Amino acid sequence: MEIPEKLVKFKYPIILTLALLLTLSSLIIFAPSFLTIFTYFWPLFLSTALFLVAVVFFAKTSPHSGGSDSPADKPGEGLLDYVAGHPELTVDSYKSE
Image 1 (cartoon, rainbow, N blue to C red):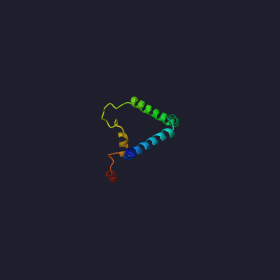
Image 2 (tube, rainbow, N blue to C red; image 1 turned 180 degrees about the vertical axis):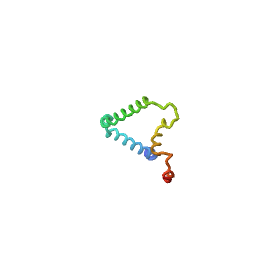
Image 3 (spheres, rainbow, N blue to C red; image 1 turned 60 degrees about the vertical axis):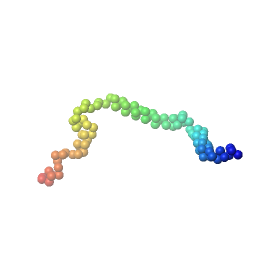
Image 4 (cartoon, rainbow, N blue to C red; image 1 turned 90 degrees about the vertical axis):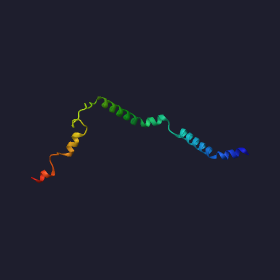
């Protein structure tokens, strides 16, 4: 009579272990193999690898700024100046004409 009492005492860990084993075994049995997944996604893996190689190549071969503080050397400064317009032209200058 002691064995059923001990089984009742460990009922939840036994159920959890069985559920985990059932889930794991069903994943192993029914999941596709690694080769199947690789053959489906090989174009994505290849294009990602080529993109990363291109990024590393351009990062190594592109010229770096020499530490000068001119606005033309800062990335995007020329574009910001163009978008901001001409600071010498204000609304007041148009009213006087």
